[in-house]
Length: 222
Image 1 (cartoon, rainbow, N blue to C red):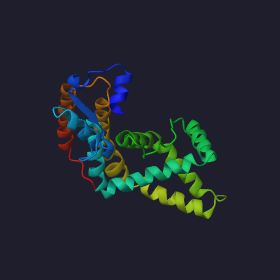
Image 2 (image 1 turned 90 degrees about the vertical axis):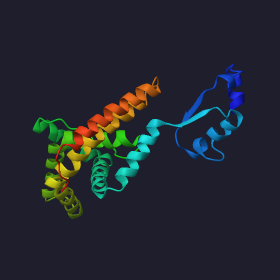
Image 3 (image 1 turned 90 degrees about the horizontal axis):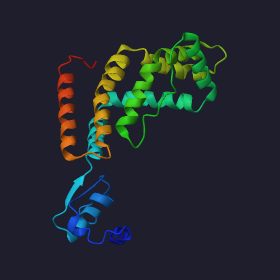
Image 4 (image 1 turned 45 degrees about the vertical axis):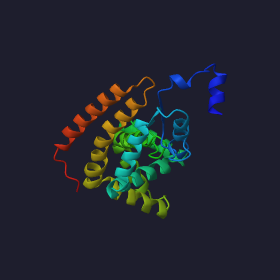
């Protein structure tokens, strides 16, 4: 089927010109027995098969953070806030009206889950940092509203106990946002349509320098 697709595009003698094949790590592409890369190498044994750099970065970051309970706790809060305002137009309207009164900027909490793992996590963190004063004030208003349901009041107090803690703000939100920023920038660079291996290596060198500088900061995770 692949050969037929190339022939339909007018590429008849493409085997002699094919140098490499790169794709994400899905088994249909990189499977050791029946993956497309292995099937192509049976026909062209010189072919260089490369697992997509950006996909490998995403998987490596996901595996690393999955073993960190603090990161999981922060993601749980981000997802809860996203759900709180995404499922209630009334609360979102109240949030925006409160932002006008406070003369602050606010944005709807962004989802922390998605196919672009790093970008979604970074955007969700940055969104909360930007809107933090307004969101906290709005949650306090709901928690103290005598007309609010007891269940809602209890839920808001639970969110506030975490959001207003030094541990969450400094050791979770700000700390992980500092790590996600260079990672997501590297990911975006590796997604470029005209990227080549030399540019990718240059991006990695820059990232390692940033990471080294970051490691010298004595920011203790409580």
